[in-house]
Length: 390
Image 1 (cartoon, rainbow, N blue to C red):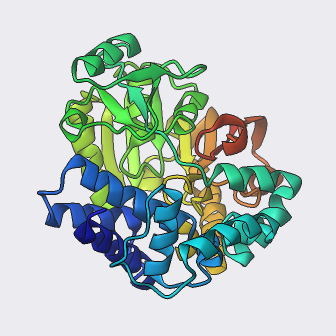
Image 2 (tube, rainbow, N blue to C red):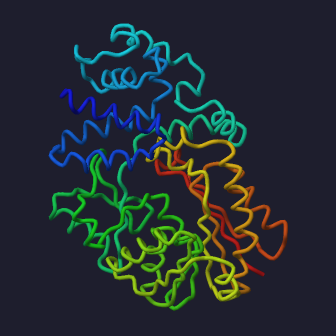
Image 3 (tube, rainbow, N blue to C red):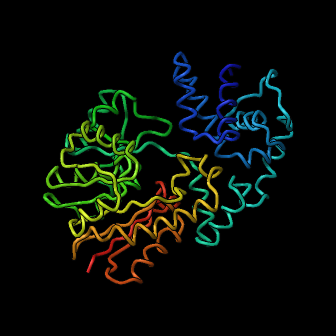
């Protein structure tokens, strides 16, 4: 273990915990500042950072300390390293840590699964007995899933293309365009600019097909963000028709425009969603996707820092936003059109609860719901409900 790399990892962890930086951004900044680090160096730092952030609370129990350097030390023991003599920290010794690891099994779930008490209470209240399995699944490392861009080639052709670049990708059962990389593997950066494949979780790839969007139709993605599902819709529509990709953040729409160009998706028009847009698009859409802002709890595999940044008040705010979106946005859908409401949350209050509020007001018929359980699928957690406007 190289001292400079160990200290760099601890510095990134500290910035996440103390300065509340987003883990991905902090890690990317560290790599950009140190271009001479090799693949193994980056892998060591990334694994240390992600796992210390993921297991912060259980590591604190084992270390008998909340000091960042102590948490890193215990994580390195878990990774099979010896703690170097030059790594000094305030916490228990390696020998003591082994005993405390055994004691971890008898601790409350919030400690074992390394989550705040309030989040454990909320998950248990909303999901009941299934919360145990879901939070455990959300603590597992996530593989990289790709979606083959069928505007450029089939999934089989995408696999062959990746293989020529020494990237081994396998098809995902039940999802016609999905590929998965081997555990611990990633898509090399130069290949991302080709537009042949998109990094998109398998659970996310379930959502766009639920709209039933067909070539030639008018589709609105009302909360498009950077457009993962928008691009999927364009492929499903074979680049025929019109997709209005709307969002409140110009930065995300700019990124979507770049991605659309790479993907060869020419039917996408981006725009800011505001009252004027709602009036202009009233009654226009054959299909409406509301991929609502949410707690993001279904993505904890990839964003373990989220559970430490998230607060109860933030969840209440997104619930309010979800209610507002379901009150305003359906006006853009024509009678007989299909609405898909989706989140990347596992909480029922953000999912079934939000949809029930719309149904109670009338004007929509229930068709189906599609919860994506991390425990059952191994994917990120998602939810989608399909409704038809009367």
